[in-house]
Image (cartoon, rainbow, N blue to C red; front, side, top):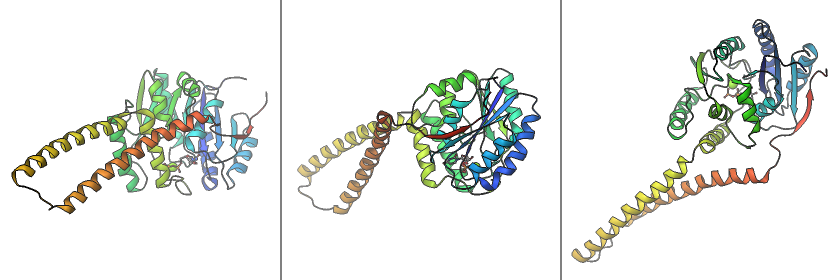
Amino acid sequence: MSRPEVSVVIPVYNEQDGLEALFSRLYPALDALGRTYEVIFINDGSRDASPAMLREQFQRRPDVTRVILFNGNFGQHKAIMAGFEHTRGDKVVTLDADLQNPPEEIGKLLAEMDKGHDYVGSIRSRRNDALWRHLASRTMNRFRERITRVRMTDQGCMLRAYSRGIIDAINSCQEVNTYLPALGYTFARNPVEVVVDHAEREAGESKYSLYSLIRLNFDLMTGFSVVPLQFVSFAGIVLSMVSAFFVVFLAVRRLVVGPEAEGLFTLFGIAFFLLGILLFSVGLLGEYVGRIYQEVRRRPRYLIDAVLERKE
Ligand code: UDP
Ligand code: MG
């Protein structure tokens, strides 16, 4: 099979209302690039008309379209992983299906790759999402900058380009839960970032609940850093030292002032505070242990129902 120059990977989950608009902008934008390409859609267990629409699009443009149909909803990053495993292109671009990442910007990313960069990240010029997501994402960006070695201005934007070498490296990783832009970054030799446009969702609603966003951020923090664990040890050391001083102080007071029984509620306050830290630490440890558990079970990361591609 001939290798196209560019593979575009698009995860799709219940996007029936926006897919037609995506097709009508994506293909002309790619045709205009003057490069050979393939588009790989991954249907992540949609329960709406999306799989049927992807099948139809495959019939329309079988020369450049391939469709992977999952048998359930495994999540955006696993869908992209499956897409990566099926790519044949020399350069691989990821894109959201909801047209928040304009397909017309793909050329900008590829131009950077032509200059020799093996990883092109992106910064959304003005982000069109809910305000609370802006703020949460800015905080998480800052936190991640501090605790991991991953350097990116805007971790949330999925419009990115990767060289074949990075894709092969990602494909050789077998981890269950990961954050692909960060994983790709760790393999990059010469990364760069470009500013891209960001639109409002074409149709439908965000597929991320607050819960899944929190899960995803834990994937990023625990998957690329053990600093949270070290924080816990340091907090333990500091608290033990403070407590030791406090015990000495109380012993001296006992000798000087005599027995005291005041301050019961202060004691409660301190105890609850420490209990909170303890519970948080156990939970944090659990995040790591849970991930190790998922790894050792070695269950398949996703199940593929069918792959639609033209046989040559
Ligand atoms: N998506 C997916 N599986 C999921 C959730 C999302 O394949 O479980 C896809 C979705 O169809 C879209 C992309 O991932 O193409 C980004 O999702 P969304 O736009 O909902 O995320 P947001 O832009 O709100 O961060
Ligand atoms: Mg979106």
